[in-house]
Image 1: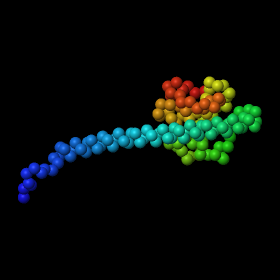
Image 2 (image 1 turned 60 degrees about the horizontal axis):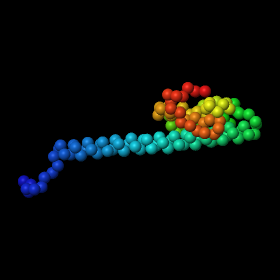
Image 3 (image 1 turned 90 degrees about the vertical axis):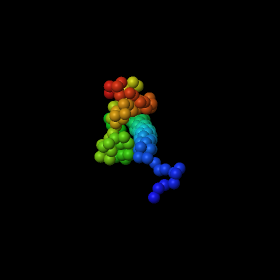
Image 4 (image 1 turned 60 degrees about the vertical axis):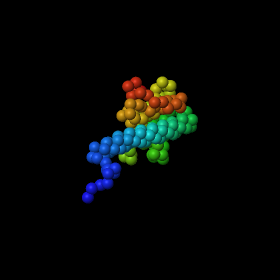
Length: 139
């Protein structure tokens, strides 16, 4: 049986073009979603660093000296794991602590963001800064 004149279906080439456009748009969407998820993880990491810095400052206020390690790691284990750390939940800290009052040396550092080209670091003055990985030499 023949189709009526004036109606026609999609050709194979047209269908493949539509599928290719859908695949390209889906790929763009996935990269945007991944970037926004990492931005959320970075914000959570900065929050964790600030919480650790508050613990150090509280300790320093009580004891008149910097602690040798960040206090209360067993009491607040969730702030010692970077959300970007692939080894999260294994009971180790994702952050490095360097007890120093030098304003130019990082006090608390998360290096798990190195794969994104940055290092998140908290300084004695209370600021959390993003350092490009190429400029980070460590304390």
